[in-house]
Image (cartoon, rainbow, N blue to C red; front, side, top):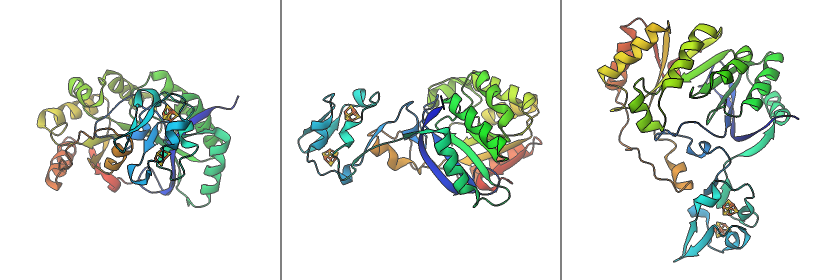
Length: 307
Ligand code: SF4
Ligand code: SF4
């Protein structure tokens, strides 16, 4: 049977996530839960209900349509019981929500359906473009990811993934033959700090990165989201650099923390725990970059990475 996956966004004509002009595919579900995530709607493993209060007319249609009694209107406010909704596959509450105040984060697609979109976009990529699988964690829905990457590889399409690395090694083994580039997030080399802000330790992430540095024949780019007060101290930078050296990793892509996903937390009715003023200054970015460069590691910031 043809593999299917939950896809929460497809962006054509992207120029920041690999060489040339690309089609970006965002796959639902992640194995981490970073508190700065800019795609929080992609964390849940199944599609999730989004609620836009600005569009809601409080007509109560969704209350009647939900078979689980998960919505009520009280004191002119719509209240959603997320314990039910996060596991719901019916989404019958959308049926008569004419203003689209309610929507669902992702839709299910087959590999064939997605390949049609990719082939439609292909004529606009130019010579260097291709596809980048992002998320969420694109290798979580591994059967789909493997088949899609294989079909792209067979069609001479350049392939890349953006991964958090927190997966069994066998997932990488299945896709490596069909991948040109891997963008690999290393959010903090200290496992306790990593766990505090992402919900998971980093042992598996470090071990997979080490294996990829030896076994992956394409381009491996470690990405570091620079978060002041979390991963830019001298002590943490030294741990990063030791890891890069031990594994002969020669380049890093630094991504300054941003808060562009902030509005999405409202749609999920989830608290955004990040301090909006916490953005790395130019000086802080320079200090992190220089620490890598002074250790012989090429450092690129944001979209200045030469693709
Ligand atoms: S997502 Fe499911 S459980 Fe939640 S309100 Fe809609 S129909 Fe009810
Ligand atoms: S059906 Fe839509 S517009 Fe009506 S109350 Fe529910 S969310 Fe609001």
